[in-house]
Image (cartoon, rainbow, N blue to C red; front, side):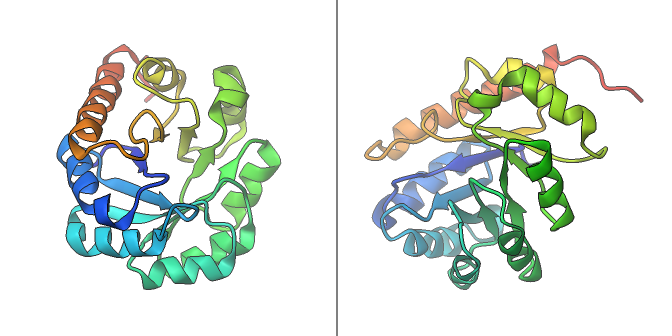
Length: 208
């Protein structure tokens, strides 16, 4: 079963993308996004998609416009993650069969995103809303809504967020920083995966 963790590779270059992607995959994270404000982001997405194939879900982050959705899809990406909520971008991704994870910080944004067909919601920046705010939003969302925390999530904070009810997380600088070796990224990925799995055992049981 895939872990509900998204590797955010902001700043990665095409020449290092595949080696870093393989290291992250080996640690157990199978969803990877290359933010479009990275150098030659579409080329990195293309190389990752070709190299990792069906073993991973690869796509883009910082997807802001409809035309970018098509460009990511043409490069082999099947995931569109955004820092904001634009229903037109969400709808464009869904028409192409891609997963869409828009960024939300208010209930209005959350419901607009769900109405547009979002796969799940990216709570961003999670550090701004905080755990109490996330729980308040969670209380009004439809049952089964996937809510991932992004922004300020690392191995030290993972347990608190998971025990509070988050469904998954996007991992940025705690996982990858430009210039880090694949070996270093792999070590960081393993630590984050271990933290997520360890948090499972301190989560309160869900109602049945």
